[in-house]
Image (cartoon, rainbow, N blue to C red; front, top):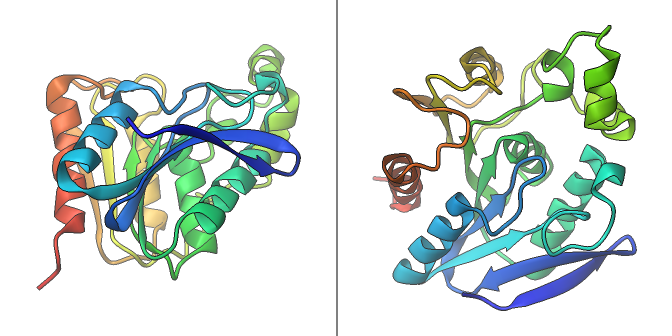
Length: 230
């Protein structure tokens, strides 16, 4: 396993693990409340180690090994951390793999670094979940999400307009995902400007997509995107 280290981003200590290797470097973005030591992140790390591929994974401030208060986290702050991690720690092309909320951040990362993002993989990607995840009148849910995070998310909505991303995009989604409806994946597919977008629906899959055969589907997708195109 790569060593744990820290990067200062706006006064926040961001924990990361960087595995040097060949390009494109894989960058893993965890979901809301998740960290870089989950099943999907560790499977990607083992995959990168076996292939000699570079991999960067990290914890947003207030999660995992990064100090701070999780309840104070906001989408724009975590996006700032993702951009800083990519800009300051690695060079060259990257493939971004975002899980759930990490898929939302991955889309914004691709919008801001189009020259570097070679491809994007969304695993149960949840763009705009502050918008569709509950109704305007549901105060309890909004408070549970943390007001500051909800407000930052509303400023970074993507699905109401065309998403100006042109790299290959692969969306993997569970058929029975109860947290991020399959319709969100379809809306994302339609909003993306890229002509190379594929949605893979995993039969019987839930939100986590961490079963062995689901992990294999993710790794097959990564492998295909890393192969030289004819």
